[in-house]
Length: 164
Image: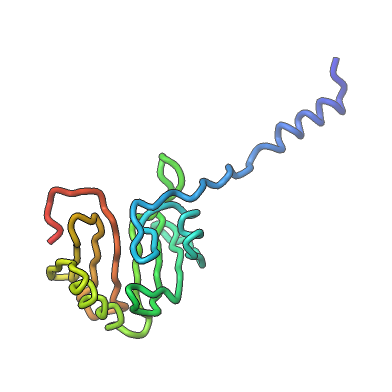
């Protein structure tokens, strides 16, 4: 027969493991990197790239990085948006959003630099879009004048429909 002190000790050992958070997932390898910014990954990927100041929102977690230079333009603010946790594991991000808090035209300086580097472009009602085959990278610069003008860089999976 097992004595009460031993049973109590065993119960505390079993209960001691309850409620612990699982070990965090290691940084996921980004599908692509543009000018030093990872375009996909998990929270560990974002933190390793210098993103921080993470705030929980209704759609997920947003982590920011200030002082970012993109193709020599900046300093800009950048953010990654981690989606709500999926059944497959930890939340993921699939793009980087950049902007300048006070200068709407700051990200527009990238347009001629991308054209000079061989990127093709087109205008849509909401954005100037850039692509550079065979690269999977996609860049969109807001064309609206309300709020902060954003630049979004992504590396989406291949899609048969045209980007523009």
